Image (cartoon, rainbow, N blue to C red):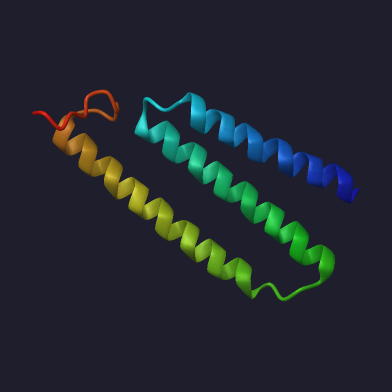
Length: 96
């Protein structure tokens, strides 16, 4: 049972990485794939901690940091949409 869950975790993590690498045009899709990667890391940590019966306080710290990361990404997305009108990375230019 543990082998299937580890294989499922690895599949989820690498599918999130593939989506992050392939969808690099839109900031929103990149943020969603980053959140997916964070959630799969949370599942992996939970499997590890529950398997070896460690304390689960680190999971709360990890969730707090992931919420902060999500809020920072959303604020950058809102700033980018308000200033440039879309979330394409190709519309960003330092020369203007």
